Length: 440
Image 1 (cartoon, rainbow, N blue to C red):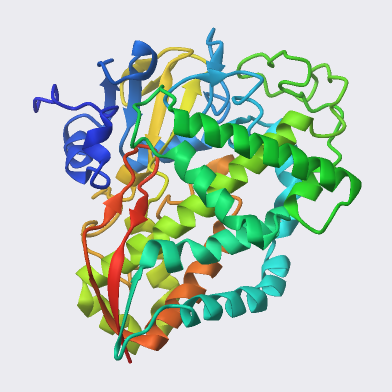
Image 2 (cartoon, rainbow, N blue to C red):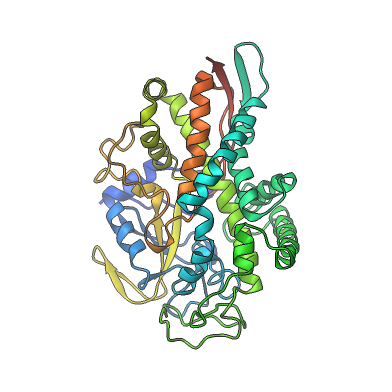
C-alpha cells in the first residue's frame, strides 16, 4: 500500500492551482474508498469518506435512500458541502440539499423553464447576446486581448441566469460579485467566514427578499416567480417550515404535512434564489474558460474542431469532462452500509469526487488526453441520479454559442498571463484568464 499520510483533501492550498489530479490518481489506484482523517484544516475536526472511482460514485449518487443530500444518522446538520450546515435553514431547504419527495416536487416547479421547448425559444436571444459579447471586445489590429473569464466566459451565463431569475440585467454584476465572495476561499479556510463573505451574504439575502416580494405582487415568466407562486403536493414534508427538520433518511409520502406544505416557504424561495446565483454564474463560466484553456494547450484540437464543426457537440462534452467545475458533492449515510469492503456508519460523511470520476482510467481511454471527438463520453460533470443538474441543457447551449463564435472569429489563442484559479476544493473555478486572440 502506498503511503497516503500526506494527503489532506481539506487543505485548500492544494487546490489553489486547479484540481490536484495527481493526488486523486494515487487515491483511485491505492485507496479508492479513502477515509480522510481530520487535520487542522478539516471542518468540525471530523473525518469523512472519499469516493474517487467512477463506479462507486455512480452507485452512491443513484442511492438516495442510503446517501442523503440532507442529513443522516443522529447528525443535527448536513448538506452537500464538507462542513455541516444547519438543518431547516440550509440543509433540507436548498434545492440541492433536499431529499425526495420535497426535492422532486420543488424541482418540478422550475423544470419547464429549462425544457427543450423553452431553450429553443431562448436560443435566438442568447445567440444575439453572444454576438454582442464578442462585438464588445477591444480590438487592436489582427489581435484581441481580453480577460476571457470576465469579458466572455462569465457574461453569457450571467445574462442568462439574470433573465431566468427575473433580475434586471443592470443588476447582473451584483450576482457575480456575491457568488465570488461567498464561494471563494481566498481570505479564509473551510468552515470559516470572512467579512467579505458575510457582507455578500447579507446583501444577497436583502436583494433576494425584495425581489421575492416583488414577484409575489407582479409575477413574471421566470424561475423565481414559478417558485414563489408554485403549488406542491400537501403530503410533501416541509423542512424548515416550522423550525423542525424531517426524520433523517425519511422519504415516505405518508409523513404528516406541515402548515405550509402546499406552497414553497419564504426561506425555500430565498434559498432557491441564492442557489441559482451560484449555479448559474459559476459552473458554466468555468467550463467555458477551462474549455478554451484546453484548446490553447492542445492547438491541434483547436484546428481539428475548426475544420470539423460537426464535432462541436462532442467537444462540448469533452470540455465539461475536462473542467469538471463542481469537483465534489457530499452525501450523508442514513444507515449502515459497505463500499468496497469498507463499513460506513449511519451519519458518516461520504464525498463523491466528480472530478476524479471524470479521469477514471477504467472508464475513459487516455483520460488525461483532451479529445474533441471523444465518444463515448459518460462524464459526471452534471452529477448523476435525482440531483442531475437542472441546467445541464442550458449550459450546453451557452457553451455551444460561445465556442461557435470564438472559432468563427479567431484562428488561434494564447495566454497573455497566468491563469488565476479559485482557492477552493468545491469548485474548479477560474477568476482571471488573460488571453490574446488572433483574428481570422
